[in-house]
Length: 289
Image (tube, rainbow, N blue to C red; front, side, top):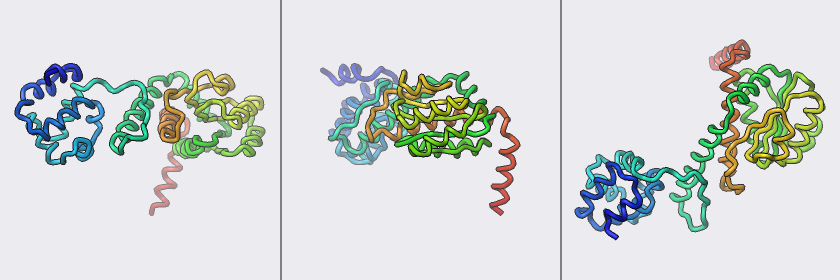
């Protein structure tokens, strides 16, 4: 297969493909090695640094720059702009990290996984649900946040983000406190539980207890049709294709925080907590003097 036929089977066309066709015969051996790697991994290369591409092709940053200039680009940055237009779109499924993957490949895979997961999470957000949840939290007497394992970081960040929006909340991270805390709630209060699997017993039990005491209940999870989704008043789902693996835990947390940030934004936009927010701002500014 000729280089033109090979390239046309990989690239969707555009300026980059035209320049490859026009200039391939003038490339050096090192530059052809770079071109071959780019041809075989176009989407991956769009996320690499010049140093990473040089390492993957056993060349140098200078060689990569000269390759870009041989194709009549000013440098690596402009080269990637046109490569993105020609390369196939990023996959919509998360690619697993393999044992033999090097640092650059792992970084690129995690970058794509984060993009896919966040894009899917934002796509699934229902505006009416977010607005209803934000209104409920903004007007609540007490706000409880429940999470164990990975989501413990999320509930602590959520508590701080709600405080920045003028809503004071309490978070509970262990089974003992989650057994007792919901018993203090009533119909003016809100309980929020976060569980990737939607099956975390302590969180599920706490939300059910809160609901029995009249509180409004909200769950955030990465698993559809889970027990937690059926136990609450409002269910907020994030990307459910994130691998259940330690290497991807941070991506689940990113999706959970993305949902919390949308709720926070609606609380702030509603103006319900403006007075408290102004007072907090003045207190913070006073403390800086």
